[in-house]
Length: 512
Figure 1: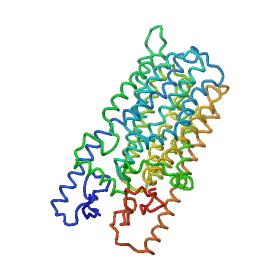
Figure 2: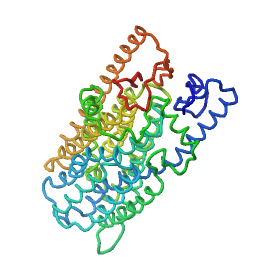
Figure 3: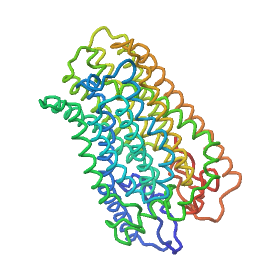
Figure 4: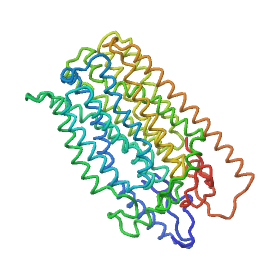
């Protein structure tokens, strides 16, 4: 690393599968064969990293979604009757998960920065699996509320830890597709939960089916946590699946890409970065998108099976008939993530576009003349699930400085919790089974997501134009030049391992 190196300013555009376009820097006197060897090594390394990290994160997100959403299936398998839920108590049980999530989100984000992230994630997976399994023992409203609170607090680690890990290992252009794969685990989890809920619903045993749901999925989650402990590395330096040369290349990939390597020197919490985050308009655009997108999600996630039975389907039918929604969600997340990777500066456009079908769907669910039209509207809501992964990827691409990035992540997931707490409260027991207030609110929320993402795009374009003018005015210095991975123009790069923020010393332009 001490050699005098310059980046490959255009080479990566010609290298298939290096979708990061962030090739490592190489010695100035490198030959053509050196370039070929470098590209081959970088491509092989990227696949090796993908094969180790992405399956672990994908399956973890799978369990993450299953364990918080099986409440919906449990609601049509006798949970409400066994625990004697009355009035809007079910709405509060649904919301309580995100109360725990909200309270522990920011402390967990700080711990992610201070503790070995792989081990910390594994601990939380094991612990929340235990709590989910123990939920089967609940016999009162208070006990169920406590179990939901603890599950939410323990699951609060997963999404910010995934962003932390992917920012450590991947370049800016690689982040959207990798975060999409992680969050696709949520939709895959929905499909798995649908199938297993249908099977478990046929169990005849003194224990009711809803208890078996919690026992089976909770135990499986705890066992998976042990797998996470064994296979998820804490950092590039401690990754046993890489040799020393591969570790150096992995570090250089992110150091020269406009991403930011997480080093031991960066584990100090910096108050000035947290303050800068609070004053940055980009922060509040991401926070608002998260809030508006999760208000509908919070309601439809907890009430999905109750909505489907309200359309006229049986409890068992409701577990399977929601399966196409998970397929739509999975496809949308993967396709939108891939499009954002292939076509730069399109994330905000994709976010705005993906909210159009859900607006139509909420209208069909409210005013549809028959169950099948209403069901079509329910399926259209699945297109919205690509919003959150792209918003998280925007955070990874547009915020530098470890403390600043983790602060905006915490704020965004606090708004994520706020939306999911609000959502179930829009489903009033007195309006069952049609819930007109909820569906009107869902349409408004998705419209606000679309508008906010467009406003963010205009803001980022304005910032980029100002930086273009500033660069033309000041000229280029003699510092090493790095390809701007967002706008495809050569720009100056501040030394990447000094933990500079996007406003303090970094000339990387925002991605939109």
